[in-house]
Image (cartoon, rainbow, N blue to C red):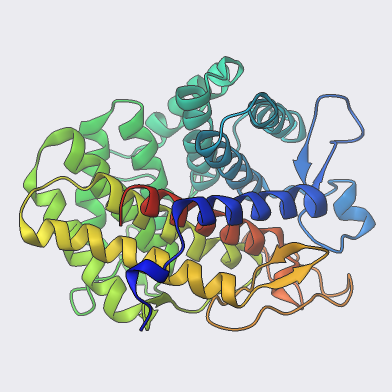
Length: 379
């Protein structure tokens, strides 16, 4: 048993977050088509020529890269970090070719969350046009007859990965009633009564539910309900957080560590969960003992997962390489073969060695930033 005095301090977690940021910078960041003032993340390391040229487009991975850059700029502000956030946002718009938006509501929601934080916390005003466009698309995508948004435009599939982040973004834009509508729909339609966890989605009008349980679905619903608890004062949102948190602790952790992991798109799933667990720890209101315990539980999962991920990392030229499964030793990618590719449904598969994928390394960075936040808050 590690005593509290032996646990890493906020300064130590800050140093580890710095190293995670540095690893992404040295292995993944590159100018977009050699254009001055641009920077994007190369999605694999070691990279193929096609990846270095940004020939394929991983919109939502790049949105999370912006969000992580905002984390670092908020933790330890500097002109260089602020410039990087602006460059990443600018490059995202350029590489997307059609401006800020696309046809996928989950993609647009993730970018909206990153840009909103960039403007609000870092004062980066050049993203204002993107926020206006994204807010408009998220609002018009809402189907009032159903109470949710589809996964993508003209789709009959309504899922948590789109509605969770979209509703958080709408709440941060001030549309609390619409965000609450979506939260109610998620709780009524996709919460599994046996486990308490959030299922993936539902096909409408037929009603066929896709039952896989993903960690990031739990994360975005925890974040949404916490946002609504703060801004509406509705006690019911606190109770939903507590109920879902119990399910996460019982079914998605082992010895306090978030379980599983993978590469490709799945490489981001656990990082998203811990980002919003940290938000629960820092923001969930309430003075009662069970509410305080929920905050402590969320913080504990973050810290225990971060300690495990750090213990099992590889050190490559002095910088961390995080494992896709935080409870197991990280594996060194041995080549460029087996790179992730797009499926017919638009998702990205894992590389042969999942640690090669930028998504996995972004989750490790998110985890270090989350551990810093909760320890700095006194947990």
